[in-house]
Image (cartoon, rainbow, N blue to C red; front, side, top):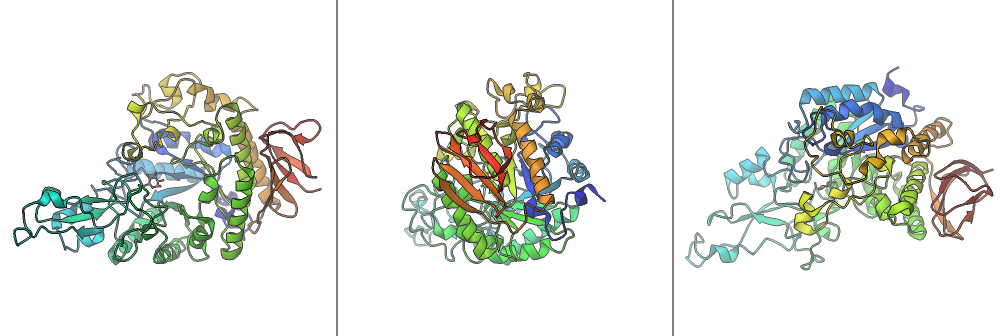
Length: 551
Ligand code: GLC
């Protein structure tokens, strides 16, 4: 039996239904060559650490060739490896070694936009207005200056400020740039929901779909186990690209612009991709970044679309039991309607670390542990972001070191969740981030005291966050094996007096989180796991979570 088969449960449970996936942000995971940027060699060398956590696989954020304007989410070649991260041979080795360790490998696919350096966008720029090359993207002619009778020449500058509609970029500023600002003849604008270096594909052109079929096949043929789909709900824009009723001059790119999000046509893409994913054995997994309310997001995980979509309503919660219960029950309602089990996450490379979100300091750290233990006991697959198992806080990256394009354009900085991991307590080789004999300055600076969170130290401490997560994952596997956890479990959420949040996973099993400020009495049951030691009288101290079996 192969290592991967051993991780599969009974045949009627698909591996992704019970899976916990570890998100790797390769830039910040481990640096094999000492240039200050994490890479494939570093990740491969450190795979045994990930396997030792007891997760089922990894999701790697983009390492494909890219000018790195958006740290790799501006892809210029979907089927390659950026030399910054290594070579295709190194990727093949990584994949083989991950599989040998029983870890599945998911990659990121970015189908909403590419890099402006992508050859097809460059060809579109060169081919000029009205060309079939431009129809691969959203090029729209701007107004023509008729003052000279022919529209070729004067007063061009005055017209530069009239984009085709009022859409705003997620990163700030308008979502349109001129294709060729120096030309009087080329009046086209092109659409970019993110930075100007990330032009949006035109999914109404069937050639775009064909192109992405090739991308999926390329990676699936290699044996990649699945794909995380970037901005999955935004591929189609409202036909005719009308003004957004809600943009109204406010910088708001995606969430409140109904014209760029959740268009019905997008579901056809995922039906097609699911069919393609199921041509492979084992079937490949599709997990979507579908940043929508539960009822809308669940439609992307109907039986013939993706298998998973992150529960974003949950990702954004603060330490608020009523909000958790409301979101939990909404997700459960969506599951009952569409059969879509929520895919849980509390962190990823785009959002503020949960320790900091939940209040920071010792309290934030306790709450983040309690929240992670809760998450791993909920019905459905779960994702852990690298460093979350260590309880890393958000870092206040010095102004001069910030590189996130969202910071420069929109004033929101995501770098604080992306700081290179501390592997060792001492500060040599950037706390062990570098596996080479030396290391250049890491691409984001590690703050003072970073070594206190080091993996090496936590591995030796049975009370550490790392030890707790490893224990929770082990117990989770056992509960799946013994069918205490099953693929059809739901979640009924309520808040009991004292702000005790309870999620009944089944008639037998519940998760309880003490979210108040005073100790609370636990509902009757046998505690299987707690995030922090239990008080002798069985009361639950604030900021603790238990998994329990009903007596
Ligand atoms: C997704 C990614 C984010 C990126 C954006 C644009 O939200 O997670 O990091 O900036 O898409 O590709």
